[in-house]
Length: 613
Image (tube, rainbow, N blue to C red; front, side):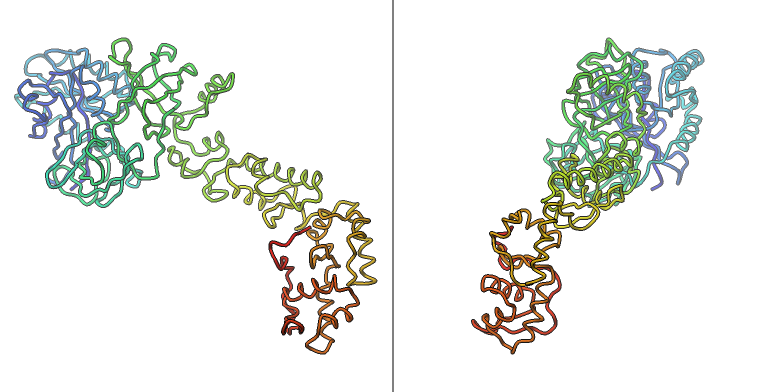
């Protein structure tokens, strides 16, 4: 099957849209006998043909109703397609519904069209053709090719087919790898197959076996089979009309206005900030209906700026930056439909005084075109998956995990982190570094991984990480002067008697309480070998050298005498040497030195539950 182009028809209720579709395709677009009997299309019809037989592009026509009562259905048909065949009858001219359909196309920003003046066998098409072309030229459609046709005589149909072929070639080709958002226009049950839904696939690719999720995220379905133009397909790429046999959703869950999505790639939006064209925002009714795809959702409108507003949706929709939609007043009598461009699908709350004015000024600078760098400047920190789900590409690689950061904000955070670490060292010198979790709270970061990543970034204050804490310049903190002076005094005493650990009274006399000792041990100025027992760094290897000179194995008493110390020190020191692998027990009474020198690292206490300084 060749590529497909999809167009919608538009125009007044009885200007011959369905008859023209039938003349172009040889197919009947009306769904129901009642529609054919009355000569009206009340629901969406669908027909297709090849533009250049036998292997040219397929042209699919979504035939939409023209009657005012069914404008919502018309919106459902036009919404997902990029181009339109606009129909006006030569014998009736421009009508009220002609204008409403044109207003909708203009609001949606549709830019591709062909104008067909039907029933040209019943009246001179010239005046109507000129009038309609002028009206279309004043909208986003611009100057369009026009063809006078007659579905009865066949006059002009071949010329129309050529114009449609030219139009088809000018239509943009959507990316095949885009995330799927399939707005549904029908749902029905086929015996033996289950639920079948239909819609216009605007972009991306559907494949049998794919998993899709409903718009509210509550239900996952599997694609059991695909049809395109009544042919079974393994894969279909947009733009295309598709029928999808799905498994996993109750019939009540799927229907017109619902949507099937690529999982984990869309954000459900309940509040959006938008730009609204034409009508001054302050004139908008507070209660309106938002039409996008095939969905029609009541919204509450809060004006913000001259042409911007906040919409609060009655139900969440999967929207992205740059989406075009239509805002229509219920009944549609007072104001014409307004075009809406989505600017932000995750807007900030407006809770503070003056927040609305500030937000209006910010929205003035938004274009509605997805811009990852601009979004990152506004949001400062955001997950890459969330930014892409908003419709904006990631402008740079993540700084940590899935997190993206605005470069200026990231630099400012790094500087603040250095300042907080330095402040902590001054304010709490006995605590070994700023805890990572405390740093996260101080910087108001959503993830501790961001703190770790910041610590690795070069900055005015060099930082290092150790045991869940951040340190300034060196791996361990610098001791405050009073503690350093006390440790220096203790060092002089221990150098004279290296294994005479000071008594608790002497430690208190020097001002070395539990916190001060802990800081000194962490700084590497003292070696803790037991609860309340401190020696100089290296005392463990020095003790092992002394003990290695004893006859092996040796007793606790022999070790105490060789080390010239007390039992109070000898017992924990020997246990400490056991833990380091410098010595080992032979039995309850004897130990011996181990060959190989043991482990060089400073291990934790022998019992993790043992008290610490």
